[in-house]
Amino acid sequence: MTSVADPIAGPAHADAPHASSGAASRAEPPPKVTAVNERELRLDLFRGLALWLIFIDHLPQNLLTWATIRNYGFSDATEIFIFISGYTAAFVYGRAMQEQGTVVASARIFKRVWQIYVAHVFLFTIFLAEISYVATRFQNPLYTEEMGILDFLKEPDVTIVQALLLRFRPVNMDVLPLYIVLMLFLPLILWLMRRRADLTLGLSVLLYALTWEFDWHLTAYPNGSWAFNPFAWQLLFVFGAWCALGGAVRMTRILNSPITLWLCVAYLLGAFWVTLTWHIPQIHHLLPKLLEQWMYPINKPDLDVLRFAHFLALAALTVRFLPKDWPALKSVWLRPMVLCGQHSLEIFCIGVFLAFAGQFFLGEIAGGAIMHGLVSLIGILIMSTAAWVFSWYKRVTAKGGARAKKVPEKTGDADLAGGGA
Image (spheres, one colour):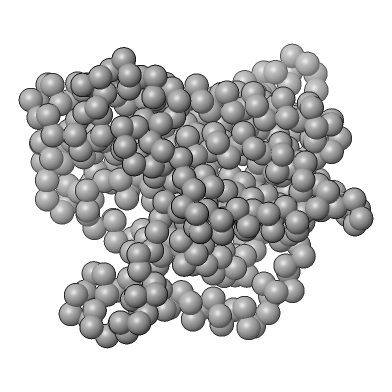
């Protein structure tokens, strides 16, 4: 297992212990894992890919939109992002809780939650100003309604309070509140998982099932509920933590089984066929009515089981065919995506601004298929350039600090979210 840092959960400090993949229970002592000074680049790669896909999906329909995974199956980039967040959060803080104690590790987690909350409030304020300026400058009030800030303009005093309580959010700003809630419960999740990992995952499944049975959800302002129900999406977060703390190792035989391979392939092909009927009405009649009645609606806010299964199938094939020592992970071609994954909190915030800017540009200044594709590529280029700048600055400051302290610089401990935990 290699050293990683969490984009949302926070960093693994140079002086902090590396997380172990064990700690499943007291009855079964965790295996000793030798930490190495290399990053798990697959996590960074797919985290960066998720950021790119989220940005593209938030733009108006264009040619690159057809390259995102949501057009070929039930899940999308959100599942990738949540799973990796749970995995890296447990990996970074699990060993800290084991060696530094529950109180110290919990304090670090809560400090990180506060930093995410501040980032969310900052993003909300700037995003609100961006939308309001564009709507006023170009005399197009439809932007305020389309981006979900009309209620803020009507009752700014009430809406600000609701925003601070995470109950009011403009369009495209639903991810960070979900992370904040999930991270608040991370100390309890890790405490339970270090003692009874499988039982903790079972309790997560139970909460997921009860959420569907009794329609548990958090309300939003001024009406409705959260776009990502934490009671349901916690399953993916906890599953990621379970995998990081030994679950993935215990599933090795299952993942390498030919039966698993063909089941995953069959499910992905079936999901692809269903999504084809969404885009090609002429073949919709080929979908059995009984299957439609059982399957629809495929609920994203409550993490439909079909979406969860689709993500599991994709993850199983990825682990099987993409080894962690794949040479291309260090290639110059994949470097921009990896860097975006290593600075995901900053890149996510930049992507939110760029998505609305691109929507405005395409709607008010220039449109067309070529311009749509160009806006998408420019946005990805800006995100990649920003990630390179963040990485360069971190290397420079790390080297300066290492020289000042006369301590050898360690690799693989960069804080993906900025700042220390």
